[in-house]
Image (cartoon, rainbow, N blue to C red):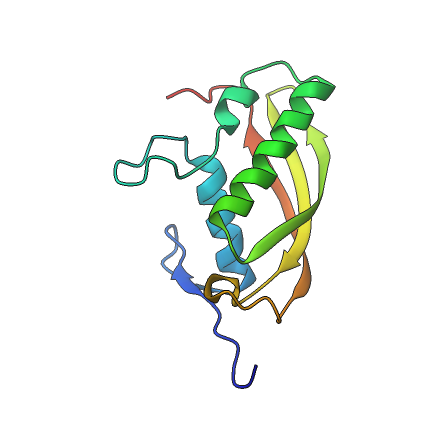
Length: 134
């Protein structure tokens, strides 16, 4: 592959600032994991089924189902990232899980180019376990 890497660009919906590369990837993962299945009218299969799991008491089997849902939904909707590690880093009495994840970032994965790859660890992602229904 010759030439410059074609990083995906976007905007932060809160600040309006430009997002590029890994920052845009983190936002994309947040949208995937924060969107319930069948919530988007023209794209019913988009998102994840995390909310149904987060309303349960945390047991080892539920934790494994959460890990599975995170990995499966990211693999389905985010071609630029392959999760290779997940770790529960915090759990609060208020019902917030903190999950750290890392993997391989493919900046041109959306074009089918997996030759360019970099190891990436993103900061912990807070997942709300209570009040998840809307």
